[in-house]
Image (tube, rainbow, N blue to C red; front, side, top):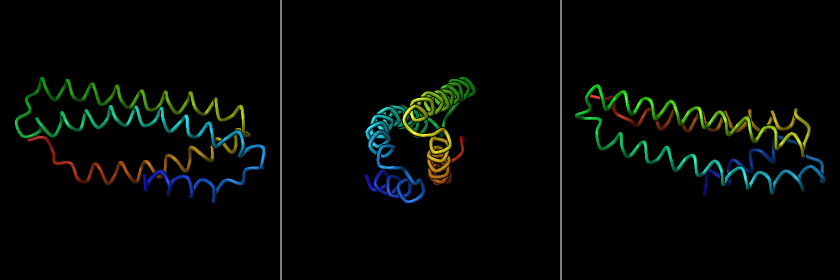
Length: 122
């Protein structure tokens, strides 16, 4: 919840929405976060699978998990494309792009932290 609050604050500080844009954007942003959270829950399950198997993972398990991770990344990209279109209907495309720039920067930092904390397959 702290990250969500911080992200919302960063977005609000960096994108200058008009009153009408803000009125349309923020409820849509809440819907986007619900969709994103479902996707992040899937990643959490994948991380759990990884944590349970990384020490004794064989080639078959590694290939299966890699396929699942690549599939998850495709879902993440599809989610962004879908929501960019939705946001662009209520705010100018430039502001929707700014939102995803901020979102991508924050997510990249979080992904880097996560990756740094995961041990390599043994």
